Length: 190
Image (cartoon, rainbow, N blue to C red):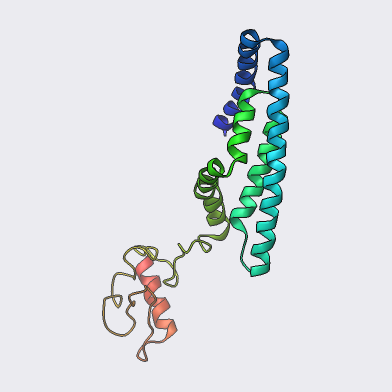
């Protein structure tokens, strides 16, 4: 969180330094014209890309698919518009990165990987991405679907009534009933 705040404070500082540097190099009036021109061109691009993204969202909804990438594109375009309206060279560069589709794609992929997926996993307990424990009640030694599964200890071996199957789900045979299995689990926990 502190890194994010530091970056957000660093951007206006860099913008100010670059505007002063460019202003002394090409002059005051051309610098103002450059900032206004990049803002106008950027906003026209945001508008065009926004319309294109809205059409893609509508098309996906009509087809019955979730428009996840398109919604992220819309959010990035919104942020791009804010950056392009802010006067400065650094903010304009960041805005153009978010507006242009070839540079927006890697930003969207990174956003999905490091922000959206971890957030959804934390809210759904792993259900959305499939990293859910499927072996009944988790016990000591049990792991998720990707690793070894099944309880260890008496009655939890690879064969026989009441053993855990390959998916980690314990099969209660005719010889056992549910109370015996829960008593056995309680004994192992102690």
